[in-house]
Image (tube, rainbow, N blue to C red; front, side, top):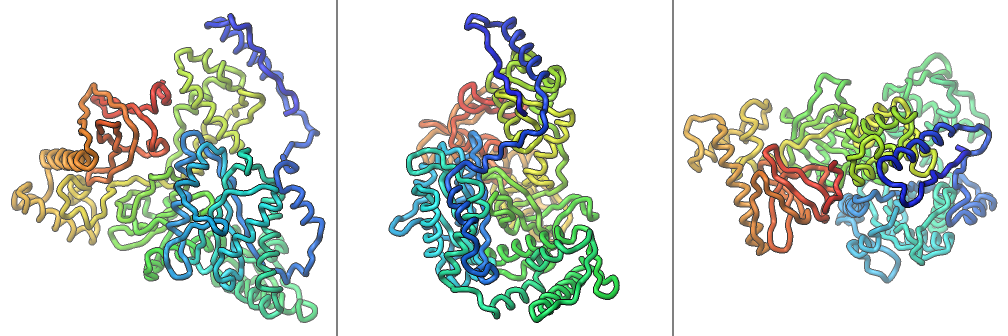
Length: 640
């Protein structure tokens, strides 16, 4: 967009409905004049940021040594932007993940470390990051990482070189992972330089410069790759169930879905030919390639994506085996894909949560249904604190794209305003809309702009496409995962048998099939009869007993919390309002509750996933006949 405009506000006295209408008209007129002009290159920002000169110098110096003899190092980076109200929780969760998922060489848990001589403390790092607009997440994985021994020395050398290239001291933490067969290091860098300014790193340095530095350091430590090492590395790629360098060469030479293997010249050419033929035979065994005559192969459409999915599955299996110390979990593990199989709904218990995309904190669950089948469930990106714990009972089904109320509001305003949205247009269309409600629309549009769904044509003005509602709903599904996971019980099945309170077993009754449930259900009935809460011969808990168990459990939880904190418990009745800080969540047999309290009192209220992004903040709760509603702080929620 080459024609910019700035809305010109009226004088200070130009207020009220009339002033807003005049300004809205100006916005619509200016937006209508905006149009695309071809020919001007799009600004990419490639020349901005620290490290740009170093990246260009590394590119211009050429390869000091033969490239194929350099040690191979993969460096993945992600700039994690901190959303309003949720950045601190996301970073805390990420540090928790990489420590929990991390395993040292001796099998102990992941250990945080930083530069030599400093003792890293996660809480202090989080405090320093509070208010930062972004952080940098990096994964460094050397092909010969196992030969490096302790990865800390290599990581510290890389970070020292990075500081030299960027010209500033960096605030960073790292954790080593030795649990997947490919040792690698997770690094988190604070988004501020040593002067407290936003740390901006040149894209070229992130894409290429850092990997080049890592390659230099590992090659210096291990020496150049010898012919035998190169040959062995290529031989290993032949039988790997993942996308490899050999596959990259096949993909480059293939004509759509067909490839012809030519006879190699010389010793190296014949070796490469043998590798490709062997690789294609392995792909044939995987059902991804079929011989089509002499030297000719037909590749299954999407074969490369299938290999990448296989590699991802393999990584999940390795992480699962390391976490549970049980390699039998890998047996007969299937991926749950509603629509591609007869089973549309999966009900079972969580065996583990494992990383799917470690940079972006996307996770997968391993779920065992009540018939004993184990499944991989892609749960996508979840708010910190919402991932079901091991043992939880979950119900998984396909997620249906649903437009948000906010998206419908944006589209309605855009349709009456020539396809554009602006705050003034919103106020003109809905004078009763609060400032907080309108600001929520702006944040939503900014997130959708980054996803390429809307375009910001000027400061505070967005171009909204006609298919906005569908694309926004699809964006939510892609971000949070195609599967919807509903937690039916936060309490493990084994603990429910003798739990003195309402449980999922009581609410579901005998209707849920499954061999695993029979013995647990019998033990539950025996416990209820032992306590005198259920008559002999009764086969399920009726509504009066369920109400009694529910109240009994809540009162016991409140009593224990009151005793441990010295505060009074408040039981909310319709019409009551309670202000306090969301302190933590408690998992009860009847479900998860949120603990909200102040200096003297606390209350237990129903927990909802969207509350987690506001953990630690002041909230206002109101009990009505329909349930409990809440807002953030005082007049700062998205309530209208």
